[in-house]
Image (cartoon, rainbow, N blue to C red; front, top):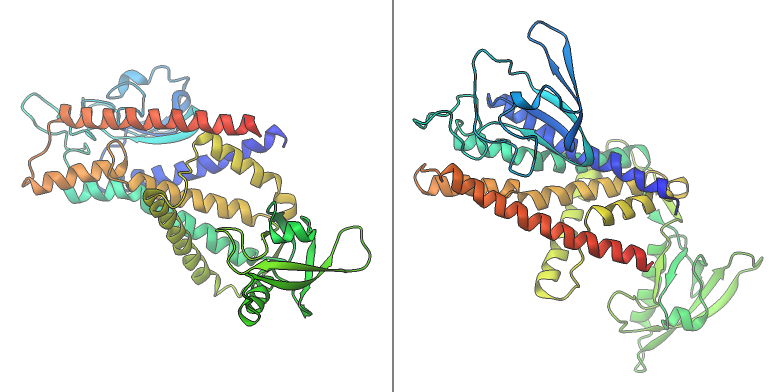
Length: 406
C-alpha cells in the first residue's frame, strides 16, 4: 500500500476532534465561560488568529507574542485550563484559534477547569469554568461526547441518503485454512451463483440457503453436502463444487469457512425519507456491537484488541486505498465508528477524560457542593493523563510491531 493513503487519517482525525471540541466550545460560550483558545492539533502552535478589539484579526506565527497572554503554558496535558486564572478586565478576551503541529488531537482552553481560583481569598473569576454551576459544567463536559454521537449519526444518514445501503454480493473474500470450503477447492473472489440449485445474488442469500440446508438435511456425521455453482475468474463456464458443510463449525468460521468480499459491494438505494431512520438504527447497532465487544474482552471470551493512532492510521489508509472500488461508504462508515469510539472512551469515568471530570463534579454534589482542592484535582487528572499516555505508548509499540510483522 502506498504511504500517501495513510494521510487520509489526518482529515478523519481532524474532523472527529474538531466536532468534539466544538461541542465544548459552543456550550462554554453559552454558559458564559471565557474560552481562551480553541486549538486543532497538539502544540507547539504553527499559526494562531484572534479578533482585535478595534476590528479585524491579528495573526501569531509559531506561538510568538501570544503565550504570555494566556493563563499558562500551551499544553493540553494538564487539562485545558492551563493553570490559575489571571483575569484582567482591561485585557483582550477574544478567543485564540490555533493550528498546531501534531494533527492527532485538539483542545479548548478555559480558565478554572481544574477548580483554580482568581485570588488568594478564594473568589472565582466570574468567567471561568470553575465559577459556573455544577449543571453548566457537566453540560460543557458532556457536549463533546454528544457531538461525536451526532456526527456518527449524521455520517450514516448522509451515506444512506446519497449512496444507499451497502450489500455484500455473493463473492468470496477469504477462505479459512483447512475449512470445508478450502478442502473443496473454493478460492477468494469466486462468485457463488447457486446453492443446491437455488440462485443467489447476495452473500446473505448464500448464508440463508446454507442454513436451511443444514436444518433440513442434518446428519449424524456432523457434515452436510452443499452443492454450489461457482463462477470463477478466467473460467468461461460455471463449475459445480460440493462442500461438506460443518453442522457445528468453530466460532467465527461459519458452516463453510468463508467470508464475504469487502470489495464486491452493491448499494441498494433507499428512499430519502428512510435514510434518517436507517442512519439512527445503524448508529445504535454499532454501539451495541461496541459494548458487546467490551463485555467479551472483560469476561475473557474474546481477545483484547486495542488500536492506537498508528493502528487507526493503518486501518484508515487501507480503507482509503479501496475507495476507488468500494466507494465512499467504507470511509464514511469508519469515520462514524471512530466517532462513536471516541465518544464512549471520553465518557468513561477515568481521570483526565471528560467522564472523569464529570465524576469529580458528581462527587462534589454528593459532598453538598464542597469541591476538591484545585491542587488535588490537578494531581488526579495528571496521574490519569500519565496512565493514558503510558497506555498509548504500549498500544503504539504493539501497532508498529504488527505493521512490521506484515
